[in-house]
Image (cartoon, rainbow, N blue to C red):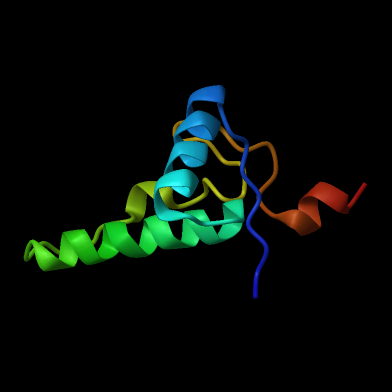
Length: 79
């Protein structure tokens, strides 16, 4: 399984803790998996197609509209 690292705001942590209490989930990772699964099911159940294009790069720390300093990892470590 791939690792996923995120930076959480205080609001996100508060909401995640609330979600964990409501769903009686013990770990943050399981709570996030469950929330995503439920979100996808909700979208698909509404007859809409899931669109996660805006998520691209977020797991890697990239921000939309931000200019990248290096083309790829090879260029980053070449000097």
